[in-house]
Amino acid sequence: MESMENAVQKKRGFRFYMSIYGKILVQDLKSKMAFRADFIISTFGMILTNVAGFITFMILFYNFPSINGWNYYQMLFLYGFTLVSLTPVQCFFDNNWNLRFMVRTGDFIKYCFRPINIFFYFMSEVFDIKGIGQFAFGLGTLIYAWAHLGIPVTFVTITEAVLMLLTASLFMIAIMNASAATCFWIINSGYVMVIMFRFKDFAKYPASIFNGVFRFIFSFIIPIAFVAYYPSLVFITPDHVPLLTWLSPLIGILFFWLSYKFWMLGVRRYDFTGS
Image (cartoon, rainbow, N blue to C red):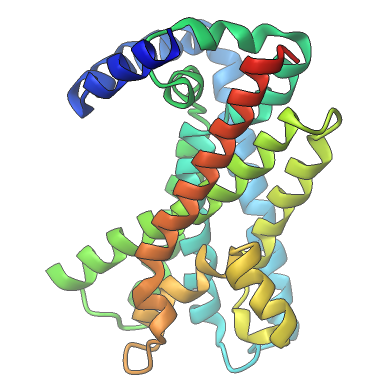
C-alpha cells in the first residue's frame, strides 16, 4: 500500500502541486479575510514589532558608531537583508509551530491518508499573511541602505540579490523544519523551536564579531550566519567575497534537504508507531 502511494506521489509534477497550493491558499486567505479586524491588528502588530527592533538598532548605533569595522549603513543593510530573508519561513512554513500540538493530540494522522506529499500538504494549509508587513519593512530598509552604500543597480546585482535572499531563506527554513520535527521524539519540544527561532536575532550581526568556536557553530551547526552575513558580503565587500558565500546556494539546498529528510523521518516514525 505504501509503495503504491509513493508511486502515485512521484507522478505528481510541479504544476500539479502549484495548482493544489493555489486552491488551498485562496481558501486560507478567504478564511483570514473573514476576520478583517484580526488581520489588520496582527499585521500592524508585526510592523510595530519590527519598528521596535529598528529603534533598538538605532539606539545601539547611537552609542557605538561601528561594530568590528561595520558602519551604520552596512549594519542596516544586514538588518534589512535579515528581515526579507525571514519572510518565506514566516509566510509559507508557519504551520511548523502547530506540528507539536497535532502530533500530541493525534490530529496529524489526517495528513497520512492523502496521495500527496505529507510535508507539502501540511505546510500548504497555513499562509501567514502577516509576513508581508515584515517583508515590506525589510525591503524598505534594504533599499535605503543599498542606496547609501552606493551599490550599483544593475541586472547582475539585482539577480544576485534575489538569489542570495532565496538562499538565505533556505537556511532559516531548514532550522525551523528540523526543530519542529523534534516533536516526533520529544513530547515537550516547544522550547526547541523557541530557542532555534531566537537565534535569528544573531543573523542581524556580522559573524566576524564572534570567536572561532561560535563562528563555526553559527556557520555549520546552526547556520544563522548564512541568513544574512555571508550572502550580504557579495554587496558589502564585493572585492573580498569568501568561498562560503559563493557556496551558500549549494549549502542552503543541502541543509533544506537534510531538514526535509529529518522531518519525513519523524513522519514515518509517527505513522509506524501511532504515537
